[in-house]
Amino acid sequence: MRSVRRCSRTGCLDPAVATLTYAYAESTAVVGPLATYSEPHSYDLCEEHALRLTVPRGWEVVRHDGAFALPEPSVDDLTALAEAVREAGRVDRPVEQPDQGAAAGRRGHLRVLPDPVTE
View 1 (cartoon, rainbow, N blue to C red):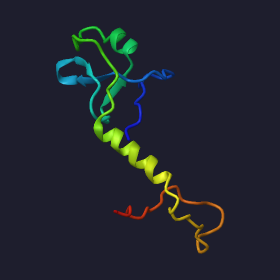
View 2 (tube, rainbow, N blue to C red; view 1 turned 90 degrees about the horizontal axis):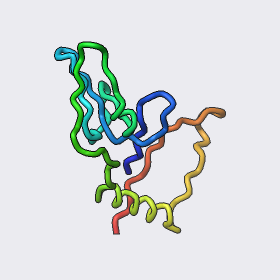
View 3 (cartoon, rainbow, N blue to C red; view 1 turned 180 degrees about the vertical axis):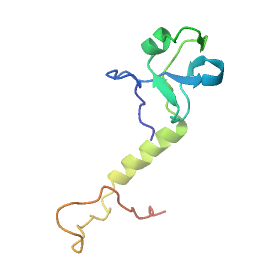
View 4 (cartoon, rainbow, N blue to C red; view 1 turned 90 degrees about the vertical axis):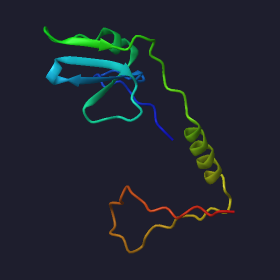
């Protein structure tokens, strides 16, 4: 399930509704609707920061004309949530035992999960 993306501005905890991308060759900043995926060279912005964005002298800002809105959950998100809840509530779910052969102290943060049982 997709988590809520936050504004990239330092100290801002508001949800992102817009994506800022720079076109350096054209000295242009583009502020558009929130991109489907977070990209390394773009910035997620909340509505306030998307509307108040300023650029250096000589640059141009191209903004999305419509209102910015939070993305609606997709069918995939809702299906993933329902499956996670169903899996967590299974009474026959195996209990994971700690690995006795692992080095004492630090445990890894990644685990391999078994394939789900199909009925």
